[in-house]
Image (cartoon, rainbow, N blue to C red; front, top):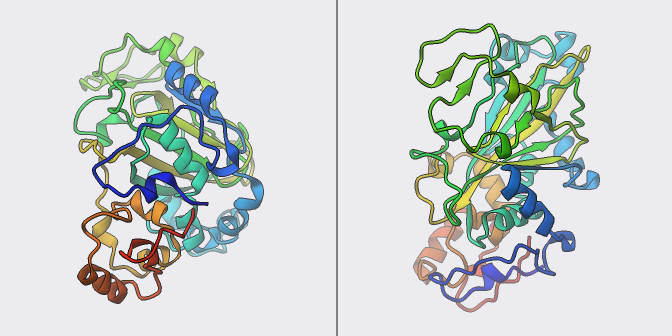
Length: 338
């Protein structure tokens, strides 16, 4: 399936997207109501957004990153200790040990969703993490907060072209007893200033200026659960209040991804620089299998960009020997599709 943005002959031309997905979008998705809900609430929950059959390959390689539920709870996986006592110790960052999971992070449906929500055909992935959690490993119950403090050097904005979108992608079923995120509509929070950022649960005290220790019962009473089956996507703005919740299922485990997208021109939204790991085996394996559209979200110039010359194409052939460079060559059309 050809992508209109990738076929764009001029790298300086940017096309604003309709809120309705184009006919060539994956699955013919109509995202009009999704965009409307996201704008109204600051988040949208899409159960089973990634079809189950398109999760199979990634699911089969989860063991390359994390222990199974049995391996963790029976103590038969030597990696078990890593996850004890720290809720963030279960995070692996892109590129992943599994190429299938790396490819899932830029699945065509996720890219189409990011483009629609941001209203821009040229989006960049600025963060990608895979996350495993296990019942009893640590306390996963969080306070309501916004993510902007480590996703932007500024503060959140709802101005068109100035937003960022985060996504939780469930790789397995996440019912309530496996600790789904809870979210709070901006209808309840639009009046809250940028600071404080964390609204602590009742019974906690803090003098830090980023914390509010009033207990916030109205906020916690209005939160919405993001529980859903494998393939569920929760898209939310960096200014949306949310929190992680406790895993209570006996011998439970949950696996998900956490992604961040921004318009390519939005330079203040950032978490990682992809070049820092671009010489690693996992990165090269991903690039060899990715499409031009998928690579563009990491900063690869699109076909037709002045960067692509005989000299750079020859160099890329040496750096990525298994990458089909036809779409970027001056003499070949963009034939690869997401």
